[in-house]
Length: 209
Image (tube, rainbow, N blue to C red; front, side, top):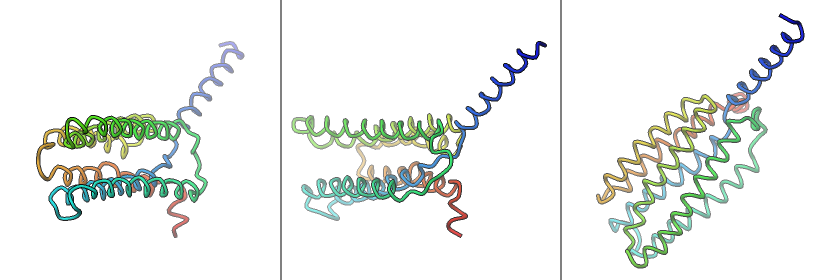
């Protein structure tokens, strides 16, 4: 083979290897997944107790739960981002995809909430229950796409777990314990995978020791 052609082939192979290794760099967004997973688990649990009359007055309690969720979530996101230590691979394809996917997921859920607020004035508050299957659907998309791109089995497994929760939450949407079931699903498919990703971040264990 011509030496020039061989050099070009070697260069292409080298660039490809770099791209593949960058795409599969460790994911560093576990703390954010764990935080939001924790909050939605708490919020759906509180929604369950509000629905059966254990807490609140049956009206304003729902606004209190979800306003607190939004405020705590936003503050926590800000603090976690500000205090997050430098990690190798933050600019990798997997980490960029993770950020974009979760921004799109949050925006989709937010748009659904706004739409349901307007529709519920005529059709009743039961429409809010359908936000749960949508939430698991966007969790699944964000997790599976990111997990496949980054080669992360924790995330892809969590994503398929969220797919299962789409069906379960839709099937039980009329049952009294639907939000307790949703809370358990969020803990298993969002909070727990986030904690596992955090534990696997480069340098986390050495800094903690």
